[in-house]
Image (tube, rainbow, N blue to C red; front, side, top):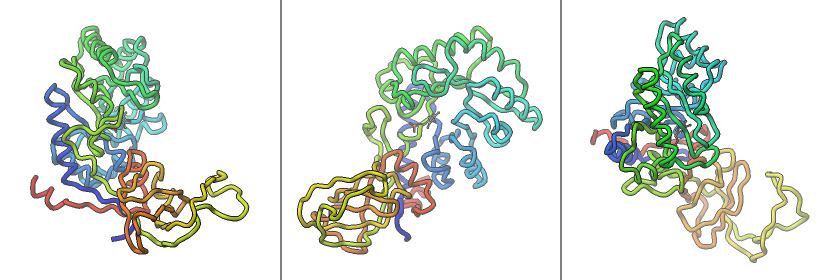
Length: 361
Ligand SMILES: *Cc1c(COP(=O)(O)O)cnc(C)c1O
């Protein structure tokens, strides 16, 4: 199998989906599977759907198209607010979108009418994180306007926290979302199917809430694929945190000094690097670099330390591991490293335990 490579344990993905469905379902919350970190990989999306997820959400239309073309049957939600210039595509390919701009909603309405279909929308509310969202005081007006648009139907409201400002979902902001849903339903005599409280950062709020109010939906990526919550990045008990493993090959091993010698100028990253002189050491070079993964987001599973990286190479301290040319080194990946790695065309993806997984289903 070509290297570098990311091994993907399909059976563990299935298990995490089942566990999260049960956990959140215990208080009436349904989960949406967020596929952006896997670039809309149809094989993985298929596992989510086979394990009971019926809405798949992605921030990119191209990823949604990839899954739809592969025949993965689900409702598709666009996560990133549609761009005005994208409206036609959004209506054509996504069933649901998250919105905060009236001008865009009007454009979605126009294209939905033209194509004679109904596009579902969720209005996003700003609750302090300061990325996308309508200010709470503008919500009534927005709902009134949206209800006047043909071709689109308001199916819910939602919010997104812990992404830009690192603001935690808590009892106050979740209660605000909840009471806003009730208020809008009463005011306009409508019913909101979806009240979407957030993402993988909502775990602690969920665990510490007896009553989750009107919140009946979360959009989960990191918890499904990395088995953890996104506020402190702690594992969720019972979930697998080792679904993905990066594998790279050793291409050079030599005893060399620990400190570069000659006149020091900028390296390829534009930095003037400094190294301590620790005498001679065993150094190994791996055939993988910045172009392939976010090197700061990977952690070796073997006893080697990353000394530095350039576009196509990672240099590691090989004093303890005693690697040889042709050996492989394995790494855990954080969310951003996974995002880059799985979307890289230079990294092979290999499903392990895929057969077993299908048999269990
Ligand atoms: C990425 C994203 C999510 C999923 O976030 P995770 O922390 O991976 O669960 C949810 N909602 C929106 C709007 C997103 O962009």
